[in-house]
Amino acid sequence: MSRSSATWLVFVACLILAVAAMLWVSRSLIGLDDAQREAQQRAALEEAVRLALWRMDSAMGPLLAQEANRPYFTYRPFYTERLAFSAGLAELRPSEVRIASPLLTQRTPMVRVYFQIDPDGRVTSPQVPVGEMRAAADRAAVPAELIEESARRLALLEPSLHTAALARKLTPIDSDNSLTAVTVAPPPIPPESEQQLAQIEDDNQQGYAAKSMRQQKSQNLSEYQQRSKLSQNGQPSQIATPRPTPAQREETPDAAQGAMRPVPVGSSIILARRVRIDRREWVQGCELDWPAVQRWLLEGVGDVLPRASLALAADGAVDPSRMMASIPVVLAPGALPVDVAALVPVSTVRATLAAAWAALAVAVVAVGLLLAGVMRLSDRRAAFVSAVTHELRTPLTTFRLYTEMLAQGRVADEVQRRSYLDTLRGEAERLSHLVENVLAHARLERRRARVNIDPIPLQRILDRTTDRLARRAEQSGMTLAVEVSPQAAAAAVRADPVSVDQVLMNLVDNACKYAASATDRRIHLEVTLDAGRKMALLGVRDHGPGIPPRRARRLFNAFEKSASEAASTAPGIGLGLALSRRLARAMGGNLLHRPTGGGALFVLWLSLVTD
Image 1 (cartoon, rainbow, N blue to C red):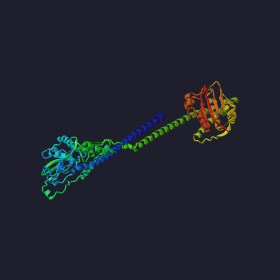
Image 2: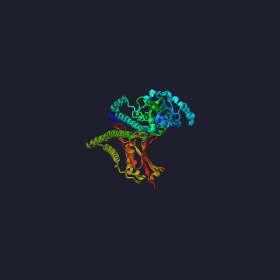
Image 3: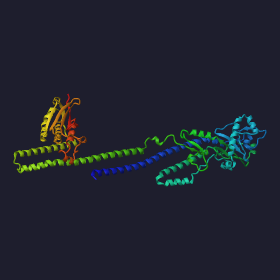
Image 4: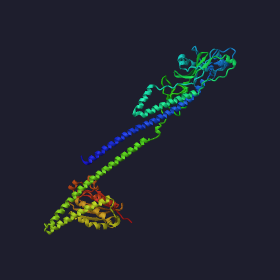
């Protein structure tokens, strides 16, 4: 495995570990964030439920207090002043003045029908007078249709009023005749629920959620008990009745009435209580108009729980967080109209994770690019060392061989001796050109190169460099053909003559090396103007094999030639074109390669001086 492959393998392994760790952390944090958002939504729902229950219990309070405060004698269609204080539920005397019960003459909202069960189990209603009381009701102008409607409602209710079963659900009458409050005992949390909560709380993975749920259960139970106390405090502990006269007190029986208690019966709710007269017990109460009560209560909480519904509480344990304290009704809250967690578009955890992933991506890209750059630089350095080593080996060998022969006097022929000296001079110039390119590239890399850009006649630049270019072409057995247009000969450019000379020298040197096998031995230096772009174009063209397209993409990359390429191709280290382009751009111009039908063409662009 190569060093480069091993490096990339380690990088990929580290990347996989980092991504795996980030995925684990992200999954954990998103799970916690989801749990927190769910807890916020649940807390908002519980708060809305508590507010709705407080409203509904507060709304039911006056209705329950009104029914609990009704005297027992109002459950007869008619009664006298004497009955109000003494004779209880005894029959009326012929000469007594009859007072119509308010239950007969008035209709109570939210109440369907009133009823009374005597000790013998007979069901009557103050709203359904019979016998002579019916005639009295007609004389009192009570509408007959109201009486008939009450009779139908009583007939529908009567089968559900089982005296024994109903009496067991009612509050007993205290011995001191005091009245207990209308209340529903808070249902206890089942033991199995307590065990489940304790088990969940011991679970380390769900400990936080279990604690929150247990605290919520405890808070809900406390709220329910507080609402129960408020419902109790809203009703008097003793029915207040007018104080009887001494004559009336003589006929006052032993009378007491118990607390009014809501009891679910079938698909409705009744309010019932016990009444004791002379040690005999009656049951009095009324049937609530449950559909009307339900609509009324839900309208009062529509702003906080628009999707709520109410249902009668079944026997057994009921979640106190959903039950009304005044009547046995369970609230089904439904969903909140607004997702509380959605009010914050992006949570802090998710935003932090997004930033962390973005930072990880940037870090991976940066490290990858840095690693690729370092490895590319290492490869280029290795290629440069190999190419320079190969490029120096041949001239150094020539120097050593020829200098030894000349020093030892082995070359007696003057012509051959001069030929050896010309060869040594050519190799010295090639080495000098190589060193000059390397030093110039190093200065450009360190940004220490000084390019003096001044207006200068284009002909002066050509006069300065043409002889040197022609001599380099002659060393390779080629000729330099200079072609300058009349407009270009009179033009001036903004350039550095030294840099232009170095660029043209690199181009001619490449033409001499790569077009050495060409039949046409000419190298053309063509100078023209592009008036539209205000540029002078100096083209160097040869008649060699040209440059393949796949090779043309890497022409201007420095040190692209490896040691093997340097050995199999023309001499050079692959630096001349890269240096030439950088020098051209430093002067405000450019160096481009132009494909032709045969040979290679490079064009140096220089800015014209315009007045």
